[in-house]
Length: 285
Ligand code: ARG
Image 1 (cartoon, helix red, strand yellow):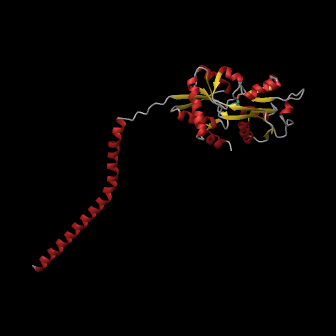
Image 2 (cartoon, protein in one colour):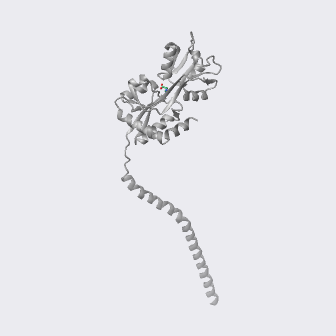
Image 3 (tube, rainbow, N blue to C red):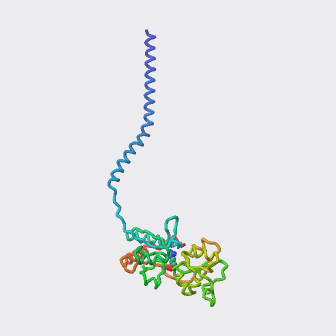
């Protein structure tokens, strides 16, 4: 009997032991499972609960009025493509002007000689393209205060016989001059050397390709784009003596004096706070 009792005791202890172990295991399993599951489920619930009200009552952003700028984005460092984005001095100054006016900037890329027409006809609000202020252009559109100055330079091949602008004016000279259509380089060169010596290209890059292939003997273009073109193509140089000096400004339709006033106010403010100088310094070292 004693033996029987002690056997029962041993058995029941064993059962208790198993039960405890089982219990412990369950606890352990639950402990590891639960936090992992908890971490997902309540999160999911939270997200849907927290996001729903936002989706149902979205905060309406106040739509900013658009300010459309016309440019010709083959004119580094003023406007050029970085991937599919137009960047550069003009693009950044225009963005700063739009921000100052609480407006949203949109840039429309087109041929340089289409910009004034686009501004005049109201297809765009203003033109900004390293555009030089000239008397002829002032007959058609208004210009803002000048925000930068430019210089017309002459690009030649490194071994060119042209060493100074004077070489182009010599009696009987016949060198061909490449320019970007409709630019001051085009206008001045046609006046100075005659239209038959001037070859117009859609952009400065094409004019430089023509110079490299010998179709023209030099290219007249603004100095900063000239530097970028010479840096990107081997065997070219810029003559030390420049061809002309000029001021760049933004053009606006004659009747849109309200926008012109706003742009001028923005240019003055962005000059005073150093923003324009900061943008220029970022692109012209
Ligand atoms: N400054 C010159 C002009 O007004 C050339 C400007 C060319 N600009 C351009 N984005 N391609 O005629």
